[in-house]
Image (tube, rainbow, N blue to C red; front, side):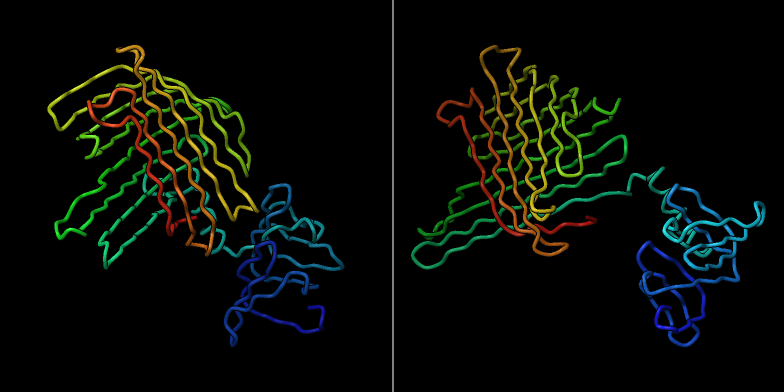
Length: 330
């Protein structure tokens, strides 16, 4: 090392920043790469270079040049700055298993998502309680994506001594999309909705669409899409309605302040093809600011407009929630 010390042991890995060695008496020792002047191994190592090659052999270094003694190609020399990783056989086997998992993931792999929790209660002259929850789970690969989502609010008032329900609705669904090219994708989805105060027992709306990745980079994803859906509505009054719909919409996800805050917006317009002049309009917006690696603070707007509700019912339902967001597998 630069301070003149020497350390011997089992070289485990170099990750591009630190070198990890398992010494006989001190256990695992992590050393910053810039503090090291010379590395020599007696066992073959897997050395990853900046051009993507992986060279296998024993290694030594001198004045900024690494020499790797390979079994088949003899001695291979490379600059110190070209070395991006060093692994022993066990570490290399682990890395290859991870790479293979990412290339051919199982259905249970690669899931990320969050759960939103909110609660409000008052006692005294007014006795009320409100619970809102949301959940979102996504499994994304290089070619396709599965997304499942759910949101709900439940509220009651006990001020008069009799429990009165003041809000009870649930919305959710699942969506699958597949990229057919770098910019174009196809998607299938199914939305479910229950709203007691709209007397809606169930809305079941399967849909198919084609989309375009108009903007897609590490900070911003903006898609536009269009297609068709089937809207089946079951009301508490016994009314049943079925209609075909077109759909047009956009979806935006944008990272702010280096990813500390994430904004997401989705808008879909459903003109009714069976009963022309009728339509539905969905708009969702959320903003989440990271407090810890696994914890964020969120605010969400979820709006549903129906041009033909039951008589006496309003056309618009807006849900606004805020609270903690617990993330998993970020």
